[in-house]
Every structure is written in structure tokens, then in C-alpha cells.
Length: 372
Ligand code: NAD
Image (cartoon, rainbow, N blue to C red; front, side, top):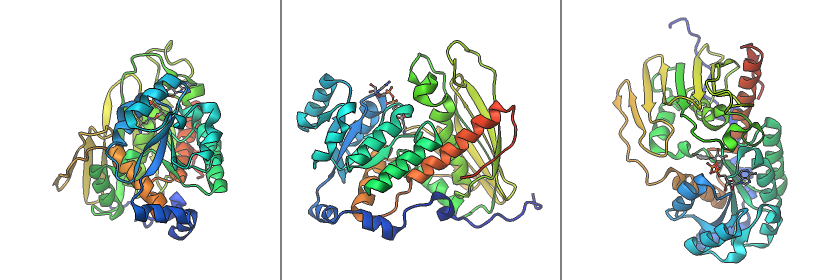
């Protein structure tokens, strides 16, 4: 272990390409500051009223202080009417996917939150930006890096903010681990191993390449990649190798992987191994540094994180809703002109790794150098 070269200093900026506070401030229209001062909550429209919107984001928007649900984009008028009645916004704020341009005429909607299948994120995020709305895009950001670039370009062109739905950045347990990693409280990062998987029980878009972009790597593996980057203090890996495991249900996972594993290599010699599957359960990671370690189980869920470090358990008060904290933070960033913890560049970064994992696995585990 002593032979491990010292890591480069933590340089989040180098990697995230975050909008500087000054330029972010310039993006916030003057009227937003007046609205913040007056205590108006920013209006959010959810695009796609499926499981995540219904079970998590809608309820979370009842708990937020700086934003509230003021519209929806849905393929079902009936569903839209029910949401309007439940959440108290006018039926004129119900849109369908082909009428998103009309969002431009609705001053009650400031933020559009894209919660559709991955392969539709780019189309819907770009439509929202072109309507002049700030955009939150669910993870994974898009099916390809090229689509991520198109979303970022559309938001820049429209002068709107862009954030990714990386809710764990706002979870207090993860925030504490992130702090420990960033400040190198246990010394230089050496290795990490993590996995996230469950058994997918029914056929759905998540097993279709066109809509999902891939299999569990797109859906679950991105969380494990996020934790590896957390452990490295957001210093990017330089290369990776990957291997797809044989399918147990090939008839179900026709054009996407069922299980895949990878190893990230960092410039300082550190390694991060990851695993994800739609056919087995796992939900954890462990990171080791020179002078200590930390690990977490129930790592990636909406609640129930259990973290322990070499110094003892991490005790934090669990939040009522990670999603409420995440959306409030985005609203505050819009209002205050502060940079996001989870900018579009971070979503794009993760897709660079995802594409490289698929490329390595397709090439029989060949080492792929990473260019971000
Ligand atoms: P879902 O299948 O439950 O809902 C998808 C919604 O998109 C449905 O309302 C569906 O009608 C709509 N839709 C529009 N066009 C569609 C089309 N062509 N095919 C299929 N559906 C279409 O999915 P979900 O679980 O709500 O996931 C949506 C997004 O949210 C995904 O990108 C997913 O990765 C993300 N998500 C994030 C988290 C998180 O914790 N951050 C959790 C769950 C899902």
C-alpha cells in the first residue's frame, strides 16, 4: 500500500465543468430574485406521470419550500385531470408530449422535470429548454453522450439551468460520506467496490434498448459509478475494463445486458469495481482509503441507508424525502444563481463511462481509455 503514489489534489471543477457562480448568476432573470424575495415558489411541471412521478416526485412536491407542482405533461388527459385536481393546478396546465412548445406561454411553470423513459429524455429536455424553462432531467441523462451534448447545448442556448435527478447528493448519509471522501479524512482513496441489482419481474421499457439505452447499467449501474466518483473525490478515472456476464433469461433481455461488471482505473493507482444486474439483489458499496474505510448498505434507496466507517457508525437524521431536498436545492439554485451539485456535465460524465463500459464488454474486456 505504501507504494501507491500520492493522488492528485481533489479538483471537482476540473471534472464537473460547473457553471461558475458568476455566470450562473447572470442566467437568473432579475424577476426571479424579486419572486424569491416575495416568497413565491417556483412552478414545476412533471413530464411523464409513471411510477417515479406518482410514487416519489409528486408527493415530494407537497413537502418542498421553494417549488410546487403547477403542471404536467402526459399522454393521458384523464390522468392529467386527476393530477390537476389532486395538486390544485388548472387544467390549462396539462400538456401532452407534442404540445410542450406551448409551455412557453405559461408563466406559472418555471421548471420542467423530465421523468420519461431514458431514450426520450433528450427530446423532452430539449423541448423544455426551447420553451424557456429550466430543466431537471432524470438519470441516466440520455441514451448516448451525443444526446447529453445536445441537451447541454439546448439549455445553454436558451439560457436556462440544467440539473440531473441525482437525489443521493441530497441524502444526508451520502453527503457525510461525500464530505469524508472530499476532505480525504481517511487519506488518499485506494479502492472501492459496489453493486446495485434486483430481479426485474415484468417486461417493460427498461429491457428495451431503444427506450432504455441498455440494461441495468443505465438504470442502476449509474448509481455505482456515482459512488466511485464520490470515493475518488470527483477525480475522474483514466481507463476501465468491463465484462458482461452470461444471461440467465436471454428471452427477456434480448438486446440489453442482464448483468455486467467493470473496473475503473484512477491515475493514482486506485481501482473501483462495480456490478449491476436485473437478475440478482445487491445494494451496497465499500470504499477504502490509506487510513480508513467506509461502507453503506441499502445504499441507493429512497431511505434506510446504513453507513459505517472505520471510526464507527454514521448517525444522521434521515430526511422526509430525498426528492424534496433535491428539487428545493434546484429551485434555490435557480433563484440564487448558485451552481448545481448535479449539473448536466455530471450526467454527461457518467454517460461517457457507461459508453466505455459497453465498448469494453463488447470488445471482450479490452481496456478503454476515458476521454471526458
Ligand atoms: P415508468 O415506466 O413508471 O413511467 C414512464 C412514464 O413515461 C409513463 O407515464 C409513460 O406513460 C411515459 N411515457 C411516455 N412516452 C413513453 C413511451 N414511448 N414508452 C413508455 N412510456 C412512455 O418509469 P419510471 O420508473 O417513472 O422512470 C422514468 C424515469 O425516471 C427513468 O429515466 C428512470 O431512470 C427515472 N427514475 C429515477 C429514479 C430515481 O431514483 N432518481 C427512480 C425511478 C425512475
